[in-house]
Length: 314
Image 1 (cartoon, rainbow, N blue to C red):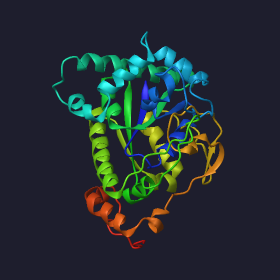
Image 2: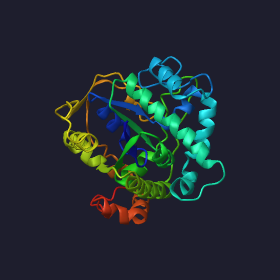
Image 3: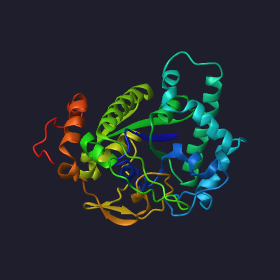
């Protein structure tokens, strides 16, 4: 089972990337799969929307995938397992040689659940490759223990000043249908710290899995065709390149998607222009710009971003 796991920090274009990959024949995008238990499966109800526009409880795709993936467990049991083995705080035990009593057994159980969920999603979507845009590092490191799952770490990077500006906004989460929920917001300091450790751990996970590809958001929107072709070749070397869902600088999103969580653009369909969101260059306050640049400059250079910017903003 081929799984492409998009790693990095949120607000870096992962929903766009996932939607594009999920439009290619044989590829199935599931969104942020680690959020599946929050989406209603563990509570016997659903108050969130799937990318198809139906609630989790109404979506036949996810009903069948979850039913086939639980292996006799309840969804609540699977959710409890996830909280005990697949969080960032578990990284020392996921990566190191020592584990507390019972951890390996719980890890094997949850890895088996995730393997079956991927397998079920591939079967329901008639696909060979499942795209998981979870980004979280705990679930990614947990997948080193998932049986028969071949993970390619697709490390998505965006200029941290753009990421900081996006995380400073208070945005409504459109997937909640029974109440208003806002996305969390972070200041410049917290974003810089999270951006740094997320990218370093994504690189380390790539070395652990042995299959790693790094892509900058800015390169994706500049040349989406080239980016998608490179990913397809890396994941399925030797296979004929699948048709790309692009017409000029527009994404062609016509295939129904069943993505969980993520940017509201997962609900969009038809032809959508692909443009870089560069509003941060004008609107990110100067203090926040300097804070992020000062705290992230080693990785800024590593990933090819300028430490100093010509336009200093406000």
